[in-house]
Image (cartoon, each protein chain N blue to C red):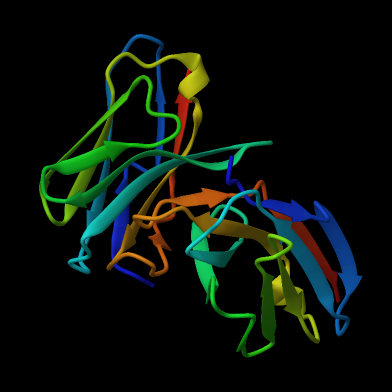
Length: 112
Length: 110
């Protein structure tokens, strides 16, 4: 398996609280991604990064922010969590354009 | 939207049979990728086929791509119980941004 660690793996929190999810890679890959997976929607891209401090929005970025201060870490922050952000969040990495992505095992986030 | 759409949505087959899944998309692509997801796990990359390729093989997997019809198929031959999973197609929209379909649940009955 590609060296990708997501933390935490499970989290339950309350509406309105800030939440930060961490993705850590040991592969030195340039690209990193955050997706959410919901029933009936498949995987949807939230934000991605194409280098340190270089990030861009995906298709469902509202309510989320990201940061990448080091190659190995990509953080996803929900500034004020809402129940609609209850989901399973996946981090992925890729070495370059036009190459496969490798996924972590996900973080199951429940917002009550 | 360039999102891939898999068909059929769910498939149940006997061990040893072949399983075929289709994926359609709406706009031009750089490549198309197939992934597998076991319950409770992340996605695992299976095959990447580029827009100038028509067919690709990997073990018991065969992927075809028809860019004129904007469709792809994934064939799993001689299925095994371990092939039970969800299968996703994903289209590369450039800059390695993938658009995933909703997935196709495959159950292989021993």
